[in-house]
Length: 89
Length: 251
Length: 198
Image 1: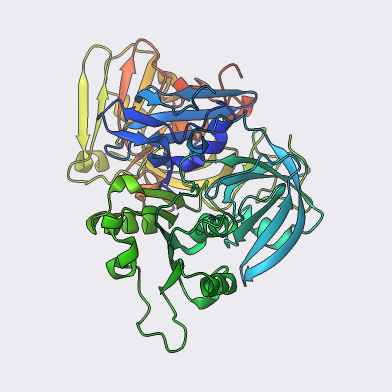
Image 2: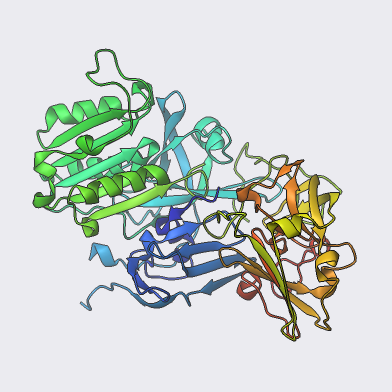
């Protein structure tokens, strides 16, 4: 179906690539400037890869392809990610 | 600090099914033992992977239904007729079987105990992560008022009905309101219909009380409810949503 | 490979006439990288451009006035499903490129919604590609790429761009949406060219 889910479904795939939870990170759309939590992006999973689009303007923010032994990640649609990290003890 | 968890890299691990129990005619809860489970926050999910003997595999995400409990975990799975994974989980898997999963997943759609009123809005199987929140609230003795608005087709489709009724009886801080979209119980005061602004209005959880809001269900339901809440004055930043669907989500 | 799940077989059946790694389906899965474009036929256009800037554009009426043919082809998606003997009607891409003056070796197909895919010009010619506007005797529905989609059945189905709106002929190859993110630049299912380096 071409209806979308949201960035919560990316947690598993991104969790295999990163040690910090990316879905709770906020990202600025490189196209329209809107800031959203990655969990709020509109995600299309019925495709050869996963595509996360800006919930405001629909531009592609993140793309991920998993191949055997490799993954390709395109974050060009996000100007930057802000990640919460625990304070140093 | 819970909201900023630094995880190890998520990898697949093997759990064992310890029991299964029916929730409705087409849904059941699967109890799992997951050696070394790192714990989870209410609202998080796991990815489940099934592999056939020839190597073919399929995976789907399922919300954790249970409050944190050592190595024990529960999932509630709705059978989808044309699903690939749900028929296996809802009908085939049995106590003693292994089940491969990865998690806990999700740093955003999760509830941590806090003295803040919480409004939960569930569409169908979207009630599962919200039930984990209700169970975690009880387990931690958190007193903050919780209201669950639970939209289902009919009374026979509701998960956890008896448990929710019993929890309400024992706890003035927990309120549960049902919205029936196709068939209502005998004597129900209103005809069946989709969720509307009225169902989401309740004084203790009004926008000026600044409740935390969690909405979960199919994409169309979530978007309708989120719009209703924003129109009623809830700050969009207080509303967290999780969309399920036939793809990627649960099938 | 994960641990084997007792009693799980999944949906697929194998069939020896399929390219390696594929399984047969009888439904018609819908895949998309974004929302389904809804294209108004009154504004639909298909444009071919060449490396020298020559352009030719067809609106829906002009496009449908072109001779079309009925074809039956097998579809192989890189996500591993194959659907055999699918019936389409379309205009051969040969017809659309016939009057263009070009020595370009590469093509980029562009779709409403922003999707792109690249392939050698010669793979669009010689009766190997169509702009298809009917499926199974009926107007092609939006979720399967309607009003019109590119159909290049000898390559993986991601090359058969849905909601196609034009083809650019180029002297340099320009990787498209999936080709720039790990998917094979050519994509021959019979050589299982799914990813870079395959």
